[in-house]
Image (cartoon, rainbow, N blue to C red):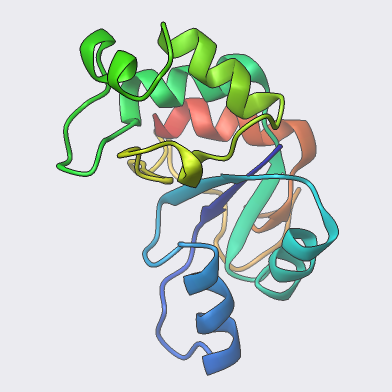
Length: 151
């Protein structure tokens, strides 16, 4: 699974790139989506790599994001009652199903497939340079550290 976080805004972005970010559901800065690691998503991510950062997410970070930033359609937080309505016994079971690729976030009823994150504590290094000098592009496993600062 890959976590993709939009870093930069939309001023001066070409229409093709805006369309790709819209397909990825990254409509504003500090939005995050979790997508499978497959060639079609990799192509879109490569196209918008100058506006996003991405990397392989681990289970603990996904679980923390679902607990703190997971929302339902009416912008309600995830709790035990609403999780049981979606067909899962616990948030851990839901996170495990998403992480193992058994189900996608957009296929779970009422669950929003995006996470609205806050800007990272201690800020970004640079939103104009690529990793490791800046914050754009492929971070690999280091995406988990950034996501923990943004939760």
